[in-house]
Image 1: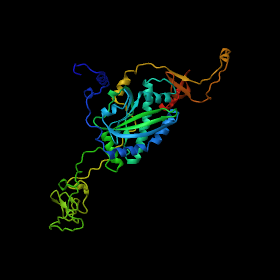
Image 2: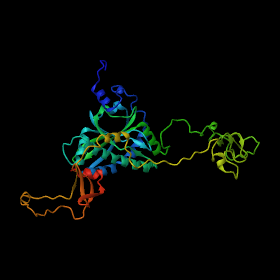
Image 3: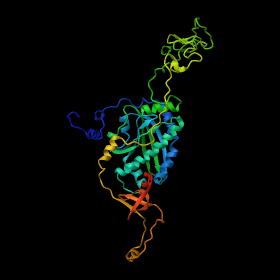
Length: 413
């Protein structure tokens, strides 16, 4: 601002760690940087996931949910923010491998509250840490389904994403990709007639890489439009314009100059000349290959030109989630905080008159069978199950099962 004061959007951006210098400024591009073919391929792949997504959401929320993809278009930050409400829940789920790049979901405040209410089975829910954790878990399920489908369609088994993390923020501080990006719009129809929009965002490079893989192109990041090393350029020692295949050239004779063949390291292969040279040295065999009976290791492998093929083993990402240093630092702040842990043998319900009639010797029958695991609770929330043991003269519990996040959320109702 001209008077040196900060606007509220700029203050929010500074608090969220977003570069505020671009707020209020026109964003370069208008979504035209993503081709129609790329958008069509992205839409075709995502449409194939919506039926499975609808089934998963229905199971998780306990109500009928229909997910429909309504639009895939190219936008920039300014045009995207014009279509969303002032307060949103943004869930970062960037791809970490396979097609690495920016990827996130954006929900309206109303939509996020509605979904969290269905999951927690309670009304008038607030978007606190627990509700945001529920939203993150839902997006994790959606992303998992997408990765499974994308792996099947492209054959790329290294696709993975970071753990989704939901934040409730003003729309001005959502960390959207720079320049043009793809916006996918979904409509969620709930059993009670409620319709909710969900927006999914893909960075331009991610869209380009996914589209290339879906269309049978190279998998990975695009490096521009230059020809690949050694293709179409004989000076690079690879496959280039050379003599026609099928024409024989004996040592000491002039190789034919017709196009359409292959040149390897400057030595013609017009019908596989014998006694060719590699880097100026006689080889006594076919150009680019060692003489008969000689180990290829002497020439650094079977190479095209003067360079050998470098074969590297495939590196797969670790399936074990690793906590970042920031997460470890944050959790370290509360390591010395006490929490109440209790073990519950079982529960039962009694009428008031039965409770008032209790006395010494009264036996109360619980809802658990003998030998059944007991519940282990932290701050009255079920986290594990175990079996009762005796240590010297004290009771103890041996943990036999850790309750999954999905089971914990289903027990909150």
